[in-house]
Length: 132
Image 1 (cartoon, rainbow, N blue to C red):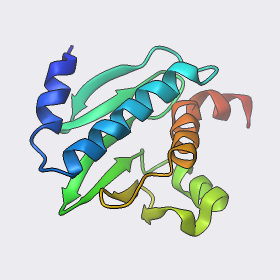
Image 2 (cartoon, rainbow, N blue to C red):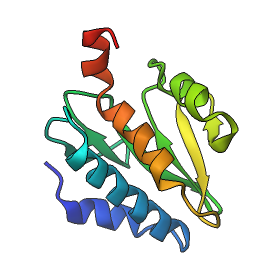
Image 3 (cartoon, rainbow, N blue to C red):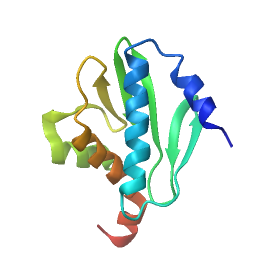
Image 4 (tube, rainbow, N blue to C red):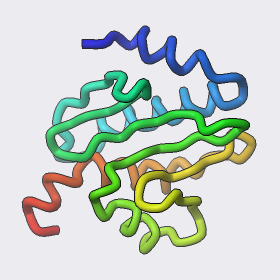
């Protein structure tokens, strides 16, 4: 199992301001997992070289820089999560097909909206089992 220091080292490879933005997103994921009802223990690990957040109740979330000041929150592309995010938030978010939300480090993150998307991703499997 990877240690948080492995994740920190990976995030520290990014230049500022992307590094700080990714660290804020990481903290938002962990904080959201801690307060979202039904989210089981979350594992933080490197998957495909990216900080990843795994739980049995939901789909894996990955985060990474995309070059320049852009960074992304990735979800499994075979889910309907991005379609749900589009239905809920439309043009308030930037999407990359069925796989990612795209952010720019120069623009403040709407933490309430992104936290809701994170919560939906972390409870995806449990909601699908319930038919929600």
